[in-house]
Image 1: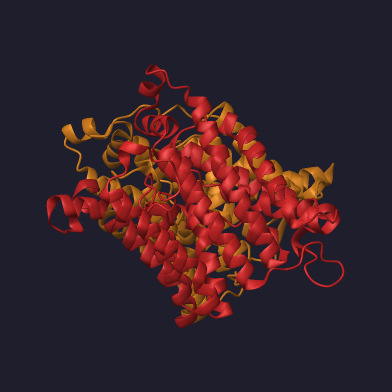
Image 2: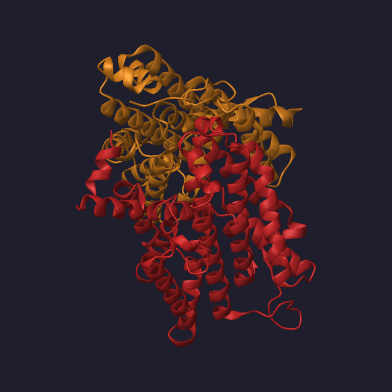
Length: 294
Length: 343
């Protein structure tokens, strides 16, 4: 029983972090119909910025996280505004190829700069943990979880309560109508991508404090974002949170009881089955079924 | 080299004019050169490089059928490659089946799997289809990794290729040059035949508007599944030959997403939905990739990624339709396509 509870707690803590990794991916997909295969690379760039700031200039990881998020926000805006917007009206696999090429460039850029070695960001509280009965909760994981869920909720608030958030939502629902209402779609697309990249950068910096990372992780981050976005429904922030927690818990349980990597096969089977039976995700509404973009 | 089989296919009496004769002569001449090359001009290593080029021609043509003609962007075609390769390797290593028996069995496995997976997955569209196929390929890799009694898991499986245990003698670089050349020609011939058949027109109609195609009396499910199965057939054949060529195969390589992406990039950059486009794309990109690998070993993938980005932005419609447009309008401007698709 204790084992089960411990696995569940670990899964939830990991799941909150996964939700922050995936929420930007889901936002970009839901609003712009872009599957950003470079998303995992953005997460890793965040990790490396925070790591470099700490090892090179002795800057605290939490401050490093802010810098990483800001840097990726700016970079994300430029990438969307001056690169992805160029092919946004081409057939959809163009954006897939474009972001795949981008991901190759970024991941291999990281290998060239920092080598393929595994890194981690050390924190003063890294080795301590909170004990509730027999269950141990490492402080590092708890802080990471709180930060990640906090950012995700802040995004939900931002999307529902600010003019820019509403403009982003409106653009995602009907680009033509949003334009007629005075939304500058070019800029909104840029900002949407910037927000997603910034959150990915923050997620990467936080992830670096609780786990090791190397450029090879990029693909896994992107894939997990896929699964979470599909489970939660595209562009649905609450869905991303729920999907992240679900994936975290399922991974933790399977790690505890199944072993091996067969669970990955099960995860993909679940993904394909969900897609076939309910393509809009578990919580989602159909968005892109029959839309004509203007 | 233009459409590879125009010399052999039945074109019908009315179609044979001077243009057809010239095209036929060019294709025949090109074939003769390709057949004679290895014997007189090529080093063994160059034959191996060219064999890789031919393999990707076949893979890109396979993707072209489902992605280019039917408009279903499969991101999991590598699953057929892996299944074909593993079927051949297991049959040869565990059952002592000769390669020439294992090859058609692998093709059948590819077709059956394409039909089984295609029936549910081809109901999805757009990104959803792309991701479902990606999920199928990744999931199959995990299955292969975990069935280690049969497949050797992550440590791979080795085809008996030399010595007394060899069931089929290893044909060497020259042999594989011809195997892959034959496969590339077969794939291009298949695509050529499809492109001028009712089947091909049906697929194009599906790509443009599936509801309208269905309303016009096209059995969309049957056509889509047939195109997917044909793609599965060609890709599984490529995987089967590749497994024999490599001798030892690993799941990470045989089910690599990179192979899928390469076929998509090659077909799209060359011109998806055309006969010659994937050939141009595969030849150009494979040579480029090999050249980068030898001259810039460290930067190879980095530069290759940058080239994909630039090519997608400047040539989203592919080299073939870009050339056609340029000739028709008598002006060459890469920015025209950018203007058409930017926001």
